[in-house]
Image (tube, rainbow, N blue to C red):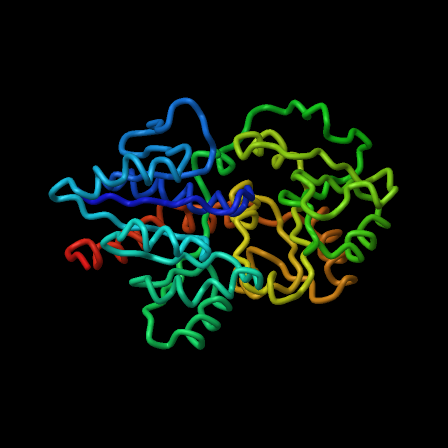
Amino acid sequence: MNMIIFPPTIDWSWMRQRPQQLAKQLAKRGYTVFYCNQSTQKKPVEEMMPRLYVVHHFSKWVREEYPRLKQTEGNVIGLWCTWPKLTPYIKKMKPDWVIYDCVDEMERWQRYEPEMVKRSNAIICTSQPLFERLRKDYPFKRIEIVRNGYDPDLSLHLEHASSILPRDLPKNNRPLVGYVGAWAPWIDEELVRRLLREKIDLVVIGAEFGLNYCSYGKSNMHFLGHKTHEQLANYLPFFHVCIIPFQKNKLTAAVNPVKAYEYLAAGKPVVSTDLPECRQMYPYVEIGHSHDEFVSKVLHYIHHAGDASDRIRYALQHTWDHRGEQIEAIIKEFTHFKR
């Protein structure tokens, strides 16, 4: 039996989304998948869908249950690791193959990366800048790009008949500019303040992460806090324009933002700062090369939204199902042998 284990990643919502989606895709394709976390619920293992199991209390599971799986004849076990600090578990678990999925350019993790790469059969990454850096650092290793994607189960691409404005959206009859994601230090706050000088309402859906909601003092700034992905279909239809207002730095240059696919799936105009991965989504994502150009494009698309169907079509060409096909083709190369 081909089994794939996703060891725990760091407990940040955007870090969990990709491995969760890929685990679901592999289960749909017939693999037995264990998606692991460090929670300690009473039920140690839960079946979330056919062949997809969520493992609670990962350390205990590795100690007590994993040896039985490892010793069962015919089981070929692979590890899909998104966090390079997990190398000690590779040593302990001795899987048949390992894929290192490099999803972000976090400097604090890079000192753990060489050992993870050494023990991996291949490296997957989410963006061209990550690919270029990894190819330079590890020229001897096979490296593939598998970008993020859109989850059609969110139904953002479907026409929503409801015209009921959620209670927590502003009702000022001003255009709504939306941002979905962590309110984090990589947000370009100077750009945000520049945008707030316009006659718009800026709506932020997402949790605080190292950046304070309360430092703006503007009546047209609305922080709604965290919403589940399933709730986005209640909000995105009411946004006139969606934005990715990130600073330009080493971290953001490596990002392939899931939010871009979700915005486009809802048919919304998208304006981003000049990030390499958003640049390659043009013309579906517009780039603001300066603060003034960014704001100018937001204001333009408020009144000239353009063709929503083209954006939706683009998102549906870049779903997690498509990414699942890519990773299955890569994994098949490793499932016919054991170390």
